Image (tube, rainbow, N blue to C red; front, side):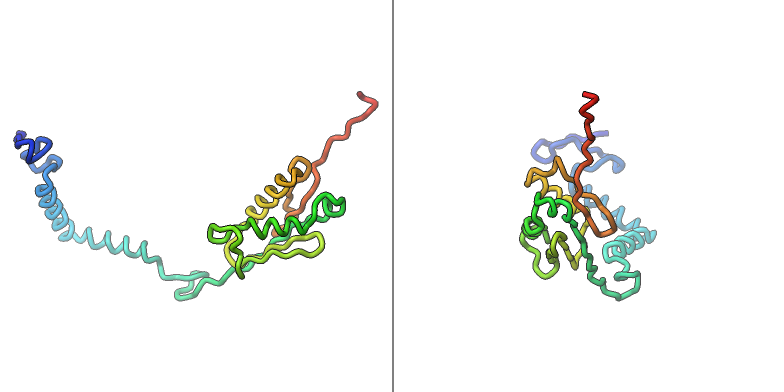
Length: 181
């Protein structure tokens, strides 16, 4: 059976039996306290809170699964080989090196390489050395962006030749026979 209270006291009708949803905050608090005490008696709440605490705190293990071990900084070295286009005087490796130095983001910011990321060049190869988690795919993305900026993306592609090496190659253009035309 529903009781109707004045509008200034409640905005909705409140059910008189305890099984219905509570609109009154005092009734909800009382029900919450009752539910908490019954769960506490059964040990349900303690187990659940202990599990949540363990998930939030982690297992206490560092790198390698050993307890108390600190994570080692990972050092990776990626190479972008520009030998073919440099030999044909299409691009300069110095330009790609400068582009990577200005566009690589560390902690969400460009020009923030610091000591953790180094970009260097030897002849026609550009080396990116990072002491933090770094993606090889990100180097490919930036190299493709550089080719697009130089308007060379239609003629060249970035190919992975080994684990940590990318190479700039020309697209294979089909040869047209003049006799067939």
